[in-house]
Image (cartoon, rainbow, N blue to C red):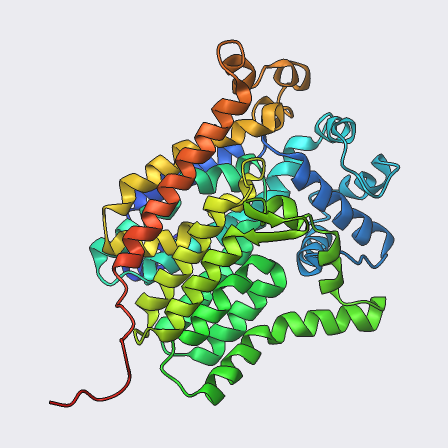
Length: 430
């Protein structure tokens, strides 16, 4: 009886601290719990397999996102009593560079696959909830806080990337949101350290660092300090990998297909001479930020959102749904101020799902293969159906075009809210 009263008291304090739309919370939580044991993509299995080998054999692994590898390794060791068979995962595949669908088929046919998927996704759920609560805290009013919570918690892009595609982006996004929260609280040291931790986890957070630095009304000496602080955690990780593996983690970037994913859109000037569209737009945005005298959190979130929308509008992201959540936190914060962006986000969502058809069956029936492998693996993907009436390449390209147009339109609407840079610093005379 006393224990029940304690739980009731704790629940009442929680409701008072977070007056959330609890019906929405429980509905979203139930949907996530129902998806977790049944859906996955080979990207998820690849990371968990490497972590299982690290945990089982105690071998050191040198690869990109090394912090995330060791995070998953530590978690697997922590929950090993729930997953006694996870150690066998390392011996299931002969090649350490596991990528094939045949290895994927081996994993989803394991008798304990449902329990493994559910338990291994639990950290993603914890960080998912934490992201929603942080966004709630960032609201300026109860109404805005509820909007931010719903925007995240009911967002199909978050659910698909985290629980169907089964990727760990909520971990990095939580750290970024924590950085934004501390920036709002004027705790700039914590904010930049958190952003640096996000960069160490996922390099794309580096695109935000210049806008953090330039959104503070500070001297250049202070800005150099903030910039160094924002790079500190990433530099520390590279120092450690250089010490233990003889090479910094950044050296692994040489193996990343940057030309394919980040720089596919370009103007070809001559042989071996190109102007890349995303860097061109990004540097123009940086120049605008450099000359603009608008400072503070609102300026930061606007410039950060525009930069990520420009990246998505010009990059190749259709076959990689785990990238989709990257712009969601900043878009949510801006949509809370400008509700015109909410329906445009719906258009973005529809375009991204259509664009994901480029992955064929790997982003369709394969995701549910653990339920009934033979059945779901035999299902044709939506693009195969479309191919019976229309060119698949044209359909996918049109979806990408519509997505890019919508992303650029949102970026334009946000850009119009920025203050124009002054024409000159000199004092006008009569």
